[in-house]
Amino acid sequence: MSLYGALMTGVAGLDANSNALSIASANIANVNTTAYKTGQNVFSTMLASAAGSGDISSGGVISHSVQNVTQQGLLASTASPTDLAISGNGFFVVSQKPGDTTSQMFTRAGDFAPDANGDLRNGSGLYLMGWPLDSAGNIPTDRNAMTSINVSNLSGKAEATTTMSLQANLQASTAPVSGYTPGDMTSGKATPAFERTISVYDSQGGSQPLQVSYLKTGANTWSYEVSYQGNAANITGSNPIATGTMSFNPDGTLANADNSAATPTGSINVTIPWSASSGLSSQTVSLKMGTVGSSDGVTQYDSPSTLVSSSVDGALFGNLTGVKIDGDGFVTAQFSNGLSQKIFKLPVATFTNPDGLSAVSGNAYQVSMDSGSAVLGEATTGGAGAIQANALEGSTVDLANEFTNLITTQRAYSASARIITTASTMLDELMQMSH
Image (tube, rainbow, N blue to C red; front, side, top):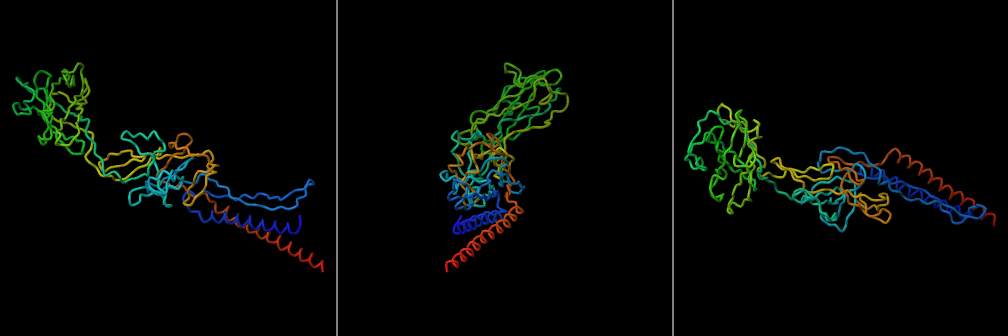
């Protein structure tokens, strides 16, 4: 190797160690960056030529950065339900603009929060993407049909009643009434032995009163009527909206809630004939009076008639109170009436070679030839990790290791500089020999 070659080797050493210093500095600067992945400097030899004898005519060193994208950072709990972390493989799908599917990027930085429009974006301004769910909670068949996750586009939710259950006792010693015709209790022609009004919920979240009336018409036999007690203009047809007879076993347990049924049953269907002017959807309520042969519903014992308990499903209108994200990636809206609704599901993108992704500003990555194409899958399936809410992934930077790298890099830089000064001195001596 000539003296000039030694100079060039020293210059290469300075350049390589400068690059190593830059990588270590970037790691240290990002020690608190969410989900930052440590860069690693790698040195390799650079040879101009080599003789057959093994003598190197000129040599040097080059430096390049290697990403450790697959390294898992520690997860730290947070108070925000929209802070997200991935435990295992995969990335969140993000975009630079809400709903923009043409500029997809990938990140593990899950410090998401709603913007002024309710779209979730992280601290780098990247918007979280996901699959919108249909009314049955299914994701689109086209896995590329994603949109930005918006947590405020639902004003509220109501749920119509479909089931009403009664637990009551009808006094066994009540005298039977003869000459009863269905509808007499509602019209006032007959006085019920027992009746109660119970409110159900319509399709718009309103409360609607239904009155259930009972009249004993024979041994162990009772007739019942279900009548609507609200504004008469809300329904069409006649009132009561349901009538029938029920029977009991000699031991007071329910024998049949509908004596007209082919087989004994413990419930009846009550269809509320909402009128067009009410604006309500047609509604059928299953009125459960108990289990046949059991005393868990309506019974006939010789004690005063009473309503022990009643329950209805459905709910009044409730306002959106927040969202919850589970480990499978479902984004669930929660409402003040206790209801919830799954509205989105977050995909987890995986790659054949995640370390080959191209890093971009904002602690995000883009697809490259080395990474392979993104596979959009569901959390916890196909090698994808689980999503954890109320958590953030920490940086993978090891400060002790980086400080050590700074020291060794500084020493190597000084040594490379010494090569240059030494070669320069030797060249000076050579030049002096020529005089």
